[in-house]
Length: 227
Ligand code: T5A
Image (cartoon, rainbow, N blue to C red):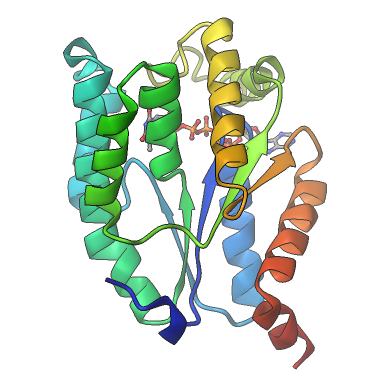
């Protein structure tokens, strides 16, 4: 298990519903850290390693849908176990910050609170897959799902990719509202780790707010900026 006291590198995750701007801000944060000469790795879930990416393709193409949310929670956890062991832990131990686009809170929100999988299974899978690698900070990007959906639609229309969303993106609006509430509940239950940030603002304003949160949370970062 990782000895937190002996490493400077931080593990930060971004969570929230579809189209709230997680990928955009993960990229921007890694860029901002690099400009401060802080080595940082960008990754995502499901995925991040070849084996986990194979599980991602299997799930998001809808091939696991018939098995139900319980089996899917197990698949997401299997992908996460490989991601933690092969990418997250080794990078943190080598002093590189790890910034992940989604992590275990997504399983709790999608399969657990919204999908109805028993919390005991979600808890057990989390213990197994994380092996102590709880994020140091989780940024929960929060916005009205209808507005977020318009963003995704715009992106897909611009790229002439209408109707290519993954199967979770195809759920109805009421389901996305419940998902939003699930992420907010998780954030409230883990207030020491999670920060909720309104995501309906511009990309630049959001980047600045996230940077402010991070420098407040990790004062050593602000000290490096001054040095
Ligand atoms: N899943 C995942 C589970 O069910 N259980 C699990 O355990 C895990 C890990 C992953 C799917 O798997 C599910 C959840 C998901 O359904 P994904 O492709 O990673 O699939 O899905 P999302 O994470 O939802 O990815 P999206 O790309 O749809 O959303 P993002 O990353 O939140 O948004 P982003 O940054 O790509 O931005 C979307 C669009 O909005 C614009 C961007 O340019 C882009 O066009 N944008 C903004 N526009 C205006 N203002 C801003 N501030 C903007 N920020 C971005």
